[in-house]
Image (cartoon, rainbow over all chains, first blue to last red; front, side):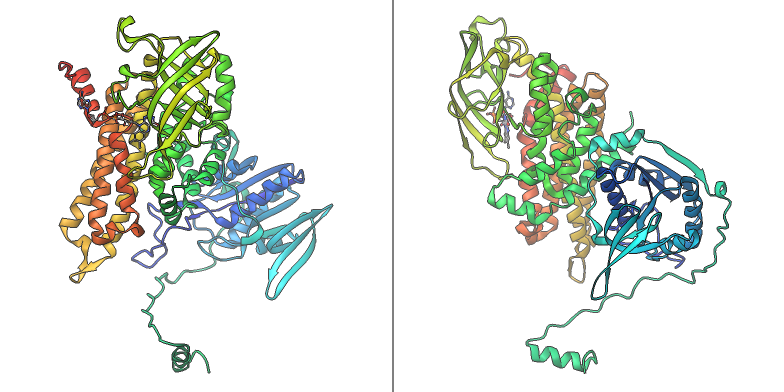
Amino acid sequence: MKVLVPVKRVIDYNVKARVKSDETGVDLANVKMSINPFCEIAVEEAVRMKEKGLASEIVAVSIGPAQAQETLRNALAMGADRGILIESDMDLEPLAVAKLLKAAILAESPGLVIMGKQAIDGDNNAVGQMLSALLGWPQATFASRIEVQGERAMVTREVDGGLQTLSVPMPAIITADLRLNEPRYASLPNIMKARKKPIDMKKTADYGVDLAPRLKVLKVTEPPGRKAGIKVESVEALVQQLKTAGVIG
Amino acid sequence: MRIEPFNEIVTAFREQIGRICAQYDDSFWLETDESGVFPERFVADIAKAGVLGVAMPEIYGGLGLGLVEAAAIMQTISGSGAGFSGASAVHLNIFGPKPIEKFGTEAQRQAFLPPLIAGTDKMCFAVTEPNSGLDTASIETRAERDGAGWVISGRKIWTTGAQRANRILLIARTTPRDQCRKPTQGLTLFYADMNRAAIDAKPIPKMGRKAVECNTLFIDGLRVSDESRIGAEGEGFRILLSGLNPERVLFAAEAVGLGQVALARAARYAGERVVFGRPIGMNQGVAHPLARAWAELSAAELLVYKAASLFDANAECGAEANAAKYFGAEAGFRACEAAVLAHGGMGYAKEYQVERYMREAMIARIAPVSREMILNYIAERVLGLPKSY
Ligand SMILES: Cc1cc2nc3c(=O)[nH]c(=O)nc-3n(C[C@H](O)[C@H](O)[C@H](O)COP(=O)(O)OP(=O)(O)OC[C@H]3O[C@@H](n4cnc5c(N)ncnc54)[C@H](O)[C@@H]3O)c2cc1C
């Protein structure tokens, strides 16, 4: 079974994001960029499937600037077999991304797509669901466990108050949650091997889909600074304070 | 020569190693520095990532890369805040085996290198002796022929990692000095089992890097086979010299990394700490030493990678490697000192790490060769001045 894993290049999770002074977005100039952590979890899951003999080939797909090749190399170093970069310098909206991925998936016809539940830059949590709808494939989102049983995938999801297990026929779209696995560190020999794995360079135009933006960002601002806290002497004083602040009745 | 930015491989290496190191935080290193317990888990992670074989040939399980890559990795390790506590814990397996790779027989390479690269063998390197110091030609440890093998007796000092090592690379005199044309002849290198029945290793209480111990060795009748001899009999000194340049470059890279992490901490503290109604870093008296440290570290870094690039290109690099080690160690130490001072009283508190960095930064100024001997080398070999000793 071929597994396709979309991966996104995002601002590194350790970087403190700064808003541009004109409030049009986050300043990405000279900022460290990395593979989106949820995408990394998705890659890890695919690699584990391959190690168990459940997957035969892993294709990583990224949509982004030329530098996203490094993001793909990261996935290749973890164990993906080849990459596809759909080059775009635009900040594409989730629907445009889902359409491009759909086109790439139809060209590759994988047996399964595993992707991050969201990218930590926009936090949209939308592409997986849109992709499933566009393809007409079943979806299982926020996976914390995936078990392949024949033609179906048993996917455990963390929901309020417990765990829900879905059984979806494949091909399907599965989105990875934080607790699905702990991604490995790529070893130096695998980083070297990844340099020799193929990356297919594509342009968005190759797929002939409508990428026109439908959303307008009005402005991006810093969250308000946190106010200094106060110390209270006792539980009674704490309860009193919370009541005064209207937090509890 | 390409120095900055590093090529994609080195950049990817630094990133992965940085991520591994990030799991070992300040409290981890603070604890090892207090307990003196060797950072076994850290070393296992580093070995698993394939670091130990970075500069070793691929046929023995290495990556076949060079000193630039090794230096970049070591700089990243020490610069993560691991300092010499982390760097020295892996340093020896990386360049220590070079004499085996370059001068050993094929059978020796096949037997000795793979377990060192995998990290299952741990070696120590015993050159320095109490009565000879920097004057290696006057070492007193003797290896005598005994049938097909050798019997070694003598004393070594400062041997790093001898408590944990199961292998020892050591140099001993095999022909008495008065029977040699030159005092540097008649020395031979051996790579042997760390046989504790014949080698007694006693840790030396010391200033810093408590987790990676240094020892006094008492070697009494250590029997080794002739297959333990690395290179020709009597050629030990020359073989040793061939490994000195890369070792200097690595020390320099580690010192620079340590200076850089100290500086980053100091800059953060100076920006946050408010006294007299403003951040202390707003005073030039605080800011300038930090800015100077940055300039010096950057210059030292260039020297490190210049020397490493020359070495990798098989070009003569003695002057550059020595200068890199001298200047890297000085710049690293000065950055640590500036960091302690910028922290005021907190610079003296363990909590802020910089006092540990400063103690560890002293190592690179002394070992593996002192500042004075480096300046002697440059005065003599580069400037053509008469030998002073
Ligand atoms: C933390 C640490 C780890 C070490 N690990 C190892 C190890 O694993 N294996 C190993 O073999 N050794 C190791 N060493 C030893 C180290 O390499 C030596 O300490 C170093 O080479 C200096 O030798 P010495 O201590 O005998 O100094 P000495 O030779 O006694 O010199 C003392 C001082 O006199 C100066 N001096 C001596 N002669 C001259 C001269 N002609 N001109 C100008 N100045 C001179 C020196 O520069 C130095 O400052 C380690 C040392 C330390 C501190």
